[in-house]
Length: 596
Image (cartoon, one colour):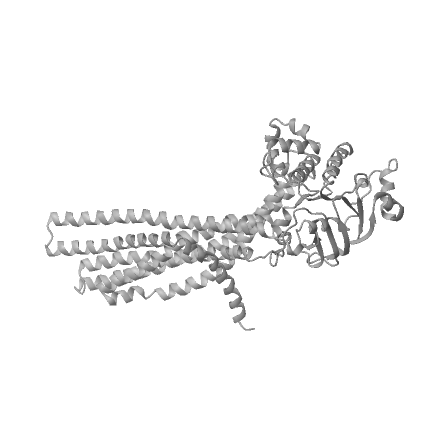
């Protein structure tokens, strides 16, 4: 197999990753430019110090310098040292400040992009992986763009300038000093290639650790109920050992880069001491030239050693940048291309025509040839588990693209309406209610930030949660913890429903959002929903048929197909499934059958 395709394939992502930060260099070019100027000032001051030392030593040897002259040279060295300190302060402020700005901008770009992606993406990526990108990976990019950039520029400038001074002193001695460098370049190339691969494994393992910690903390009650603390600890320990294993393999490469660079640099110094010392004894160069040459060689040691360090930083930064770029290159299947239609001011019909849908990577279709029309009022969806009810709700909420068949809003194709415009007309209350680690008022008012506390309280009272909220010490200002951990399942669902209904959106979707609510509270909530449905379209699924009996229309889904459509009494007469479920739920001791 030809080696060129893999090489091309591996190079392209790196080029794309670098393209991610180039606009940021252009945005902050003035800061970077003056930072490099300050760095040049540091290098110039450092380069002049050996020249001052050479002049003073040669002057002392020849007797041309008197004590006050030596004092003058001393003041020059002090002045140059102060210049180094001053310029170093400015380049650190400018360049390292640039790296922090770059980190902030990429993090904001990543976060903003994640908000634009659809559910399909989040089914492929774990939250732990995404958290690692915005923390560990981004830190590596920042370090490469800060200290890595400075070290690289400084190494290049110092190398060129030092070589010019060394050649000026003696070209032959300079060639001898540079003779070990090809070996250093070869070893650095070999070690850097291996470092890239090993660091990729380190970052992937860190993502797994982050996801393991996140999921375990979120499921802490479940872990304790099933007494799985020891197993979870063992799994976390296993991941930690894998991380250490891969990190140690990276450390081996890093541990080789610095000693190899130092060995080559000190080898050059040894050659100069031997050869240069003999040249000074033979008066081919002055003592001052010899000492200045050694001083310059010491300055060259840093760039030679920096080769390994810079290669390490850049490889780590490039690896992390490629991982970030991979996420930024993901595109949502939902997009606004060709969305020129205006959303109607009032929505009085939703029409589904031959609607089909299937999840990526799953055999069979989630929905098959669904055709029906929804108008203002309560529309109920029933059917066994896996029948496609939630899938239909997701499509109506436009969480997935409509690719086969169509959904028409007042006769306008949904795919022609801008995503943001349509979603502002939809309120959604799922079975698994998600709440932020914020106040109760903030959670209810999330969909309507301009809502007053009075409006929030009125909506909470409508869904039967107001009195329970007032039992909290802080009332509506009470913090409810991560995902509403301080609340019961029914309380979370009612707060989620209050949040959805507060928006007064013309389309309300309640996807089994009352499953954890008791029968008495359910009746109160249904009165609020029926009132809401008088002027709006409400789509509601439930595993209890009693609340749906009041729906203007009911649809039965089985295996993704619409098998029956009508009102409660009509379905009891003509649909065997609906009748059987209703009888099981209403007969004495029958309990609740699964219609979800």
